[in-house]
Image (tube, rainbow, N blue to C red):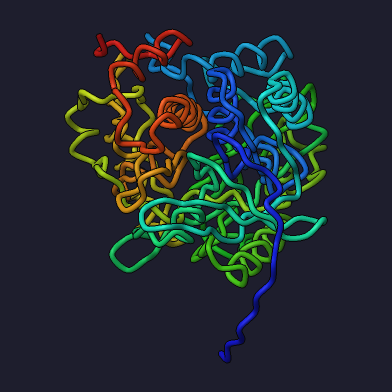
Length: 435
């Protein structure tokens, strides 16, 4: 590939206390939490709405907000949960089926009522300018052109750690061979009779495999969540070997996802029938449901031993309890059995949880940057637990409040942990081990 040198003078469009890149669950939590502490915030979102993969990729459900005893995603996560209940989202315990249009408006309203937040959609982070360990500007591209945002503290909520990587921070991706979990092209279905549905979505898969219905023998079928009166959200099928940091790989993954969806529509209508005989796919996501990409190297790597030991940390910013949930590596029986055993054994009893330390939000080579969301500093197995949306609410609000403290010095590592924990508890954060 040949290279060129391209230079251009751009404007400094915003000068704020805190710049947040990405308006998914961690990004909206970070922006709202920081704004409520009195900081000026610029929030950039690449799509035409907030919500992250719930709205862009149609991921159909929030995984549990609690551990069966305690509501873990207290604070902004609890606000969002309560708004979902108020808007008649369908619940299964504290797992919440996501009505996409209603959720878009919930996110809009959370941001709109905070006067300290300036935001724009269709705004893509493309680079940073830094001086030593400090990022000075984030560079964005939008319809109006390319512009810079100056801030004291930056929060990377891109999901892929883009800001951190542009700033030169190291990262790990996938397993020892760089292989990440498969992605899913999620869907919204209509025509479902939920009163007639009382069985596992996977119950007829083997018969369908015998009939050669499917292109790939994928036994891992998370299935359908109720999101409306006759609507379902499908977390159905896998696109394998997708690199979420490469547009060519993402393109192939989208094509694969659309190719296999008619097979699943036939499966649901003809093999399951009850409840689904009139079901049809209304729309698929405009982006893949990516489960895993980069994991940013931080001051501490949360690891599987922490999960096993139900770890406590002096710098906890929350606790979580979702199981180790690494989707199958390949569409074969051996991979599914490995997933099934791990998923059934690497889970907690009611009331158990692990601590989330502040240090996993701190990119190791940057002094004024936080990272929050699925790409924080963890090993592969822990990433599969902490990647889900309720955990992103927890991490996002901690980054936002941490940033509101750090603006005084411009240093994330100068934050007094006791002060941070007190502020998190004041907004409803679950921190039983904090003073």
